[in-house]
Image (tube, rainbow, N blue to C red):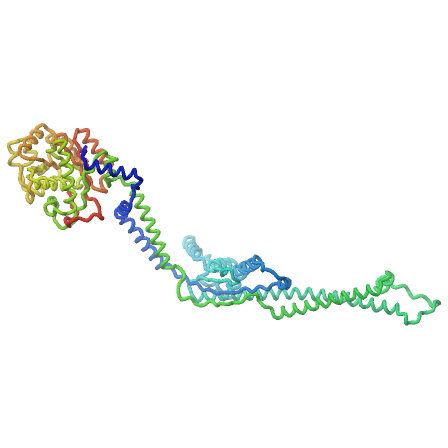
Length: 605
């Protein structure tokens, strides 16, 4: 494992910052998370917004008409005469009672009958109609008629669903809102509801006054009879005891005894005083007069009843729809999509076990990250000599850092034969191998690239497509070695190509003593040898030759190579006694890090 001063100092600095209380999760991490999952985070709101637009297009617009009435409570005479504060609880209860009346079925049925809403299509339960239609198709039945009671109940239910009655603040005003697909119908229903409430109040007052007048009339008749009887008793008592009238002789025959029902005689036999009789008559007279006044007022109220409520705002045809609210639906759809996208991205991030950071490599694999190579962008057909074509690109700068790190390791251990491998194909090992060899050759070192990827010899196809002999032939016959090595075109290093097709016993050949002798012979002519090893997951040829190498660099694709697969691959290399220098990540998405020059087209091999 690589151990050098620069990486050790960097690790100590990171540990110190963590111990000083700095958060591991910073703004850069959040920006990288958003950038990495931008498709999911931005795609979900787009999908939900499209769904919201479709919902707005297919949903019938709803229009809401509003009428407003004002409750004018009549305070009793006793409360008007009192001085002091008004009891607000009484007022609130009164207004809430009027709201309950407005929501009652009596008002609903009145409006429904007045506007003939039972036959209106908007006041029919469509779900029940569809169910009835399906049932008629299945059972071949035409029994879709509804009774008058069922029609009324459905109409009342639909009416109550579209009606909204609310108090306006703390005032005595009440808003009546009616929602309908037809704006004119909504205005008609709102005004009809207000009128029905006013008429209900008038009819209620008239009915109450009629009952009161009937009761008062009956009570007045009783009081009139009682007053007449009391007056007659006073007059007869005075006539019997008028001393101005001469008394009759004692010899005259006595009058017949009055009947017990005679009030005069009854009063005389009880020895009633004239003052008592006059007081009784006067009391009956006052009660009779008060009842007459009440009866007169009741008859007047009955003939001209006045409601305690009045309409202050008539409903008019609404010009704009109230539902669905376009901007609100779009905003909610976008917000929900953003939340869903962030949630999906977070779940995917939690389940993601791919290589993404240097910290993962150190913590999970126990190796050092030699470098993070960004994704190559540009217009060149291939990028095996990217460092020569674009020496100041971001990719070239990062790869130069990898070469420097390997050079630092060369001070502690001799690295003359360097192997480049990966876990899976197309992760960029061949691109890294050829460009790294180009850097070595540009620094004045005699460099040889050995294409040991027998199954997929990418470097051979690119630099020496017409070669007829290669690595396998050189191992079998070292006399042919000088004929197998060819100078790579467009680069300054030499290439020992692979054969044109796979060999059945290539694993035995690459790990043989002959291969070790061949490498020893090559050390006499070259300062450094870069071996492009095959990926270790499909084939195991790289395990056979890895013990013969001074160091192996593992190439992983950022965000793609599974961590578990890398762990198993490193375990196999360690079992094969390979010297693993570290890990190089390729195709790293670092949007915040712009290169000095633009090159490439994202191509790796």
